[in-house]
Length: 214
Figure 1 (cartoon, one colour):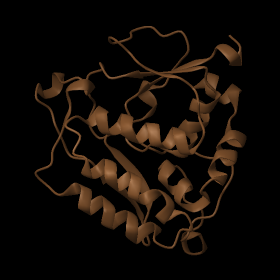
Figure 2 (spheres, helix red, strand yellow):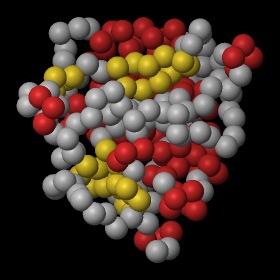
Figure 3 (cartoon, one colour):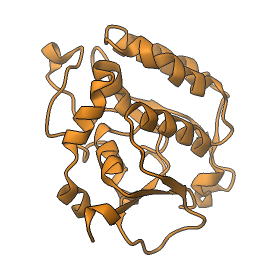
């Protein structure tokens, strides 16, 4: 299989690490599986940011109408807590000094406040924004059913946490002098800190051999 015919299969993700967008940029097609049985405590409903004192996980609370058999397409967002406000305050605390925070933040906030009923709706809306900002034109297709065998790179099990998405190069982070470079943070981190230059970083980070091995 050549790079021009490479496909990746991913779950529906909230605001995943930077490196997944390198894989998305290199692929010919992105297939999103929303028919898998929803696993808890993964990057499907959480993302990691570099706060002043720690790497913090921000979580979108969800409801499973069919219990442990609930599919990702059926996962509902729980608005009984004002999580959008908490996320906004957390992002402001972490990135208010980042040079491009004001350029992108309102668009992200708007999706939080839109009150999407289902998690995959919010994830899809954010993914579209990220791909637009990073100029990733790879076509995205929602799987029509659960896929048992996939002709390409099946990355569905690679998103239990963010530790496996290490970057090969550092970039500016506001608290880098105190804590060093914090790896595997949400794509929001590189957008807020590098702005339009994030596109070039991600294209250079792309390693097709690495993609095939995932």
